[in-house]
Length: 514
Image 1: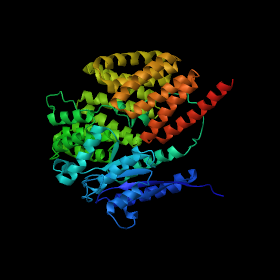
Image 2 (image 1 turned 90 degrees about the vertical axis):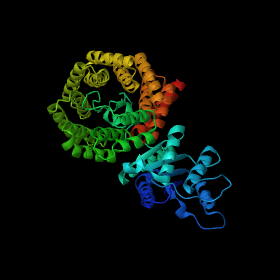
Image 3 (image 1 turned 60 degrees about the vertical axis):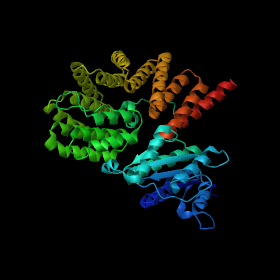
Image 4 (image 1 turned 60 degrees about the horizontal axis):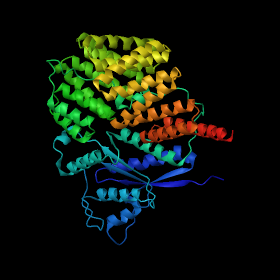
């Protein structure tokens, strides 16, 4: 006899204009139930205003009643905020979707309600719309800014149906794991540290992002004040305002520096489809703006392909960009591309080729006197040497990278250097030094809001405690890492943590009996 299936309800809230996305949401949920939920005896039901039966009373209040019975709340916004839902006892709301959001928040904060999580997605709009948004889009943008300021809820942006599908699957995987003990293929002991230098982790880590910046110190590439302000806002977490400035900067489509900067911004925020389009625009413009911009365009495409997991294609694009950069005598770009190739070759297990690329990049940035890029490539070099087992040379490279980033005060580079040092110490059995490095990196990642960096550090601290046979402490760190990986939607890593937690629980119980 089949086991009982547990059902959880997901309410979808959205204003007009998103009918296709609402339909896709239901299709994705049903597909997930069939192929992933069913084996774990869990089913998600999609709920929306379409399912609400008519009755006496204010229509929005009837919809709110259905919402209050749901376990999860998904809000999708695009270029419309919606229409006024009419007067309500709860207060004045400018749209039905806004009212639904506030009802969901009330349910989430009330332990007597089933609501477990609120997820918010924004469908991207054309850059030209951001320069003159109008009242409906302006209300959506203002809501995004409020979310960024309050940091109460994370939100995600998608460019197309593939992007939406990917995000929804991550949420469904995360919610499934909250209710199911997913058993990974193997319960083998974890023996190697994870690092943001590993390709899978580096794809989503801002701290590990290779710097593909235009050399704005050159006289023929003057700094654009609007771009400077856009990057300042982006680094402060004000992504909505930042993107509006980028949109204004690329207006007209004739500024290659602005296109390149906007492409980097989109890549950094995971908007890979739109980033690819911007790189293609830059490549087309390079025929008039100068061949060096073709190198930036191909390099940007290489990073996008890398983050999509298309590594052979990424390597070919980076190699093409490198050839153009050499031909046009762009030394900073040459060094940056060499560092990117070192990442790709390390990912493919080509240690000799990776080492050669990193070594050339180091020589390039020593000559240029660029300390931050030098430190970044010294870190890559240290990781390669650690992987090869050349611990002495790895320590020299990482020690220099540590000094350079510490002196420069560049925390986004400093944290990955500390993690790489911790991995080297762990490989050498220096548990105290490894733990100190990981905890220092964790403090920086906390301050930067880098979820992946935090997950990596908590996992690695767990490994240190595990090696000391402090199973209770290791379990707490693994649990923290698992929760962070769930938040990131990194299912494989979260499963690995579940396996580690079960193992150390068993060891903890055995030690207590003995």
